[in-house]
Length: 310
Image 1 (spheres, rainbow, N blue to C red):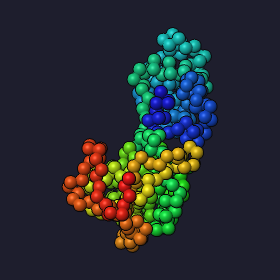
Image 2: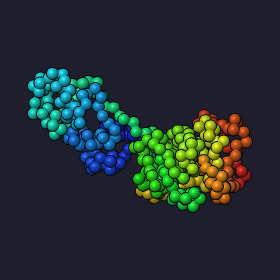
Image 3: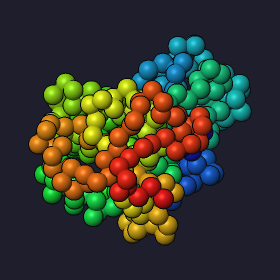
Image 4: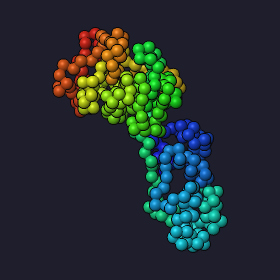
């Protein structure tokens, strides 16, 4: 139960450990063996936004169980007879001093519908999406546009070093985007909402310049075509070698396809970008005829003759 909800948030056990203050060993025992006190479980549950519906509200899970028992007019002895859990253990559960395995028996006996409910905090991030932007590319971007004010797709191992960072357990799509330069290397499995949000933040004037790092297959998607008229797009001349979030070292292999830099910005920013990547600027001969890579698998771009796509 706990592990399924943790993975639904795209959170590693190490990240939950950092958020909750629990050790990785405590989290392992909780997930693999269901061995944890109620207090341990509550700390972990708070970190992944897990709560229980259909139980009376109370500050602690033990308090919820006691309030639900009282609401139903059940004595400790009656509940013990119903569940096979001793009266003494039920008392410890209600004081938040028992283990989650015993508490679960009581909880689902009191309310069979007390299914765990995950409070969604943002888009699901898959493990393969967590690849760090190469430091040398970030150096180039900072040289062009200055320090990064906001990274809405942050990772605690990232080299972006933004003034404000939204991490994967937060909802970077709905939180404010402000500043002169925002950089995002969004989840490649869910690019569309980030493209649209970046465009909206720039169009509204909340952010002066927004740069997105995306795989080339983003070109031709409906989201891309809906904002392409305001974007300056460059196909990077070499396939990137992303860095591992686990080791903070370059990955063994380069990306399976070229990457693009998408810029929403003023004319000064456009001139700066052209000074570096002008020979690799994307141009669509007819946007209406650009294929949808996800549907056709074909290469959807025409770019200047100097661009290296293979």
